[in-house]
Image (cartoon, rainbow, N blue to C red; front, side, top):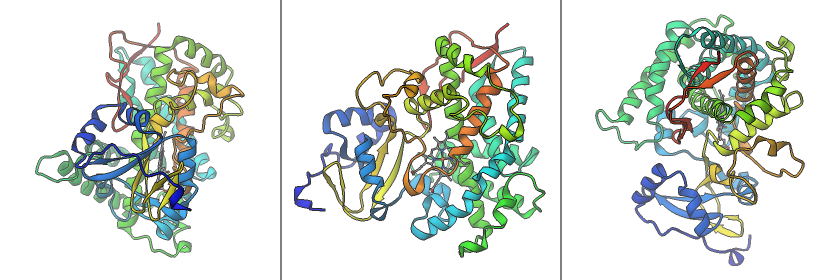
Length: 430
Ligand code: HEM
């Protein structure tokens, strides 16, 4: 890299980053406005933390194609609440080794094993919607579902164990992107206490003999080969990460997808034409691939469009270990880089502000979406999340016609992940 040919980083000029941080949390167009003014790579400050924002395929490829020059990074609040053993907070060989262990929970045979449990959860919800005499909040139902898939289907927790975990987990998630100062009574202090209880509960569960429920027995075989001993505290933090990474995100994708179907009757009709031809429940041997892109291309396009316009993770981070060139700009060592997915997905020529799933089926579509991140840290639960979403959409819409209760706010709150403000109240069409 010849540094002399590179341009310096454009900057907002922010120093303390207090106003910038406030704007970031309040203004959904925070990054977009600055990209328009400063280009696809710029630097600002967030509460004293210098941060480089990037958007667009070229910039993202420039970053991720140099794994030796970057490492993972999360804001201090996330780092503390996840813990130092967590895969998310590890780098280099320690990250690779833990990733191999945790990945065993998401192999194709593991997904095959989870499918009947997921189908049961979908059918339970369908029955609840069918028999309920009053409107039900779909967002809350999607949250419960996403939580249950991980807690019950993957980790094997049931009944009281699961319910206690759920309430503490809601407290814990609320503070994930907060200011990490544990003043008494602050969301962060409450979250930290919830973390201690959560880990204790997970330890108790791990201490019980594995009864073949969930997927934890899949981990047992792979522990020794990686060479780093996996103690209880370590395993507890990995399981906590799975709840964190897989719950809010999947619930957001499901809620935003349901919202689009409820407010866009044309899109619903278009998707229903395909869903009506699919078999529900799927044969067990087809549960993991029966509704994939080959068999349900419109459903796939629908999921892609939701991930494009309302990505559950609006941005992910890396830190530079060495100086780096991004789109002809010099990014020094030690900089935190945020890949701004939400604005990246709307950046380019055409009707990119509009929800139009059909675009993903057109030959000329050249969008390079990365809702699950990329490179060595790409999401481990991608296939599970996609499976959950596909089974839920087909299972509900194959047999039910839902309608939204009028006069509710369909706008989205943005943090921690997009979700309809009024909870998406629905009833079954009579
Ligand atoms: C629609 C749902 C989901 C979305 C949009 C999503 C997105 C992401 C993103 C953007 C990252 C960061 C990747 C990077 O830094 O390059 C990530 C990491 C991760 N995700 Fe997901 N995720 C989803 C569901 C899940 C599920 C269901 C699980 C597991 C139960 C999961 C487990 C993980 C783990 C363990 C990591 C950390 C990987 C590492 O650091 O090596 N995710 N996810």
